[in-house]
Amino acid sequence: MKKTSRLLLLALGLACSAGIQDGVAQQAPADGTWSLQEAVAYALKNNLQARQSLMNQNLNAVDLRQSKFNRLPSINGGGNYNYNSGSYQDPVTFSLVNESSQTSNFSINGSIPLFMGFQQLNTIKQNELELQASEQNALAVQNDITLQIVTAYLNILFADELIKTSTLQRDLTNQQLKRNRILFDAGSVAENTVLELESQFASDEVAIINAQNQRDISRVNLMQMLNIPVGQGFEIEIPEIPEPDQSPVLMNGDQVYDVAVQTQPAIKAADLRLLSAGKGLDIARGTYYPRLSIVGGVSSRYSSTSRFLTGRSTVDNGFLKYEFYEDEQGIEPKQTVFLPSVINTPVYGDYPFFDQIGDNIYKQVGVQLNVPILNGLQARSNVQRAKIAQENAKLDADIARNNLRQTIEQAYVDALAAQRKYVAAREQLRAAEKNYRNAELRLNNGVINTVDFNVIANSFRSAQSSLLQAKYEFTFKQKVLDFYQGKDISF
Image (cartoon, rainbow, N blue to C red):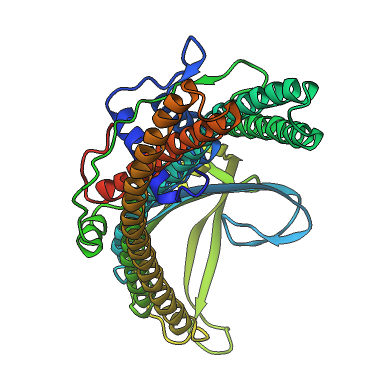
């Protein structure tokens, strides 16, 4: 049973995933006995890798929202407050002063992108593709986790079957040992016969212990995948699997591939990332284009050295006499004029902080154009990187398809081999059963002894075990092809 392929396990695991969507409770069973569906459902909810894949999906959703928000205006505010001393230029009057003062400056600036080389639009499309790819990747991770759960679950079932077979073999050996000890005591058989049976009995005991260890290890592995403490009780249900048809109709591997390539999440994720890489190339090429934005801002300032003009002080000094002369020597007066003499002196008061802020408001709005000319060939290098990333994404998609094709081809070959193995095991059981029935008659008539009968009975039990294993192997491998064809794979 250890030779059961990963594909066959995946089929059953995905069957369990389908059961989850039908409403299987994602909680630990109250009686402590787990069905395969319950184990898979619980793991997909509590397994750390499954939860981490959902976190990656949430991050991509945040990136998508942010790329859409980047089209909105950008508004930022700022300010400063300074204590000045010595000689400096006043930020309000722009005059050179030499005294201590406090100054402040406040501003709000904004910009609206008009054209960014289609980078914003392509970034949104790329993030949409990345989000879809992460959703498919989360499904692929769930399939992998399901596979691990089913593998551990089946290992427990196989170990239980191995324990039963080993126990039956030990009991048969024990019966033979007891009978031959009696015969040895009676002098009918040699001591060597007893010693060989004792050695065989010890080997059967070791086989039982190994099978029990294998079951315990598989149980621990399953509990750890479920994030359940190992110390608590844990049992699993044993599903009933019907006898398979001896002559099933297996679809050709190419036909199965044509169906599977349209549905598998790993293929969808690879294709979406290839499209995303194409958008990444468009984004890189966008750096060749000019950028156009509307910019604007509002600012104001304050200085403690600023004063507010509150009025003027006037001093009347009477009249001043002015004489105008006609000759150049100033000897002959021509006219005398008396003019009033008045001195006006400005009077300043405190200039409050908020009054200065309101009076010194400065507004601006304009259009900003950036034209890339030469930036160390960074745009060209980014385009080359994007092209390489696109080629790599194409290779990843081809590899995913190639792996899927090889997986399906192997599954098809395995299914055919398992079918032949099942038919041969069934014929072997029929022959072993006839031999067993005949041996019963001969034993009852005293034709053969008990040792010979036990050998024939043991062969019959071995044939039964071989048929059981062949049935599981055949059923699982056939379900692989059913899964890839989109058929119902429930039992």
